[in-house]
Each structure stands twice: as C-alpha cells, then as structure tokens.
Length: 68
Image 1 (cartoon, rainbow, N blue to C red):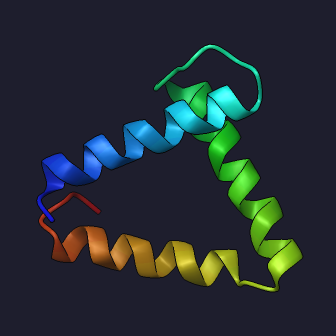
Image 2 (image 1 turned 180 degrees about the horizontal axis):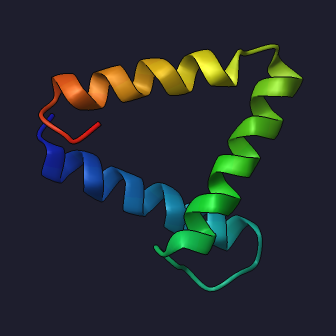
Image 3 (image 1 turned 60 degrees about the horizontal axis):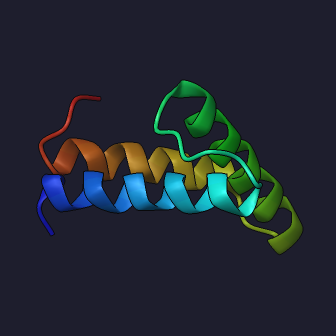
C-alpha cells in the first residue's frame, strides 16, 4: 500500500469515527485526538498494550519513508 493510500484510509477512518459520534466529518487535530482516545479505550477494554502498538506504528512509519 502506498503512503497516499494510507492517508486516504486514515481520512476514511476519521470520517467514520466522526459520523459514529454524530459529529460533522473532520480531519483536523481534534478529530485525530478523539480517534486516538477512542483507540486507547478500545485497547484497554481488549487487553491490548496501546503504548507498544504506538511504538511499533512509529517504527513502521519510519520504515515506510515517513518522518519519525
């Protein structure tokens, strides 16, 4: 998957999360913060180590040619 496709996928996730909360679709900082907070809640409920996932995601981003 290209980074352009990854960005498009992320925008769809942000859009869907806003709609699920009954909010207007947004791709700004507030929408990102809300989605990350929701992911933290999900991870806690599912027994997933969010911080470990975040570190691994940062490593993946660097490997995919993104900034660290």
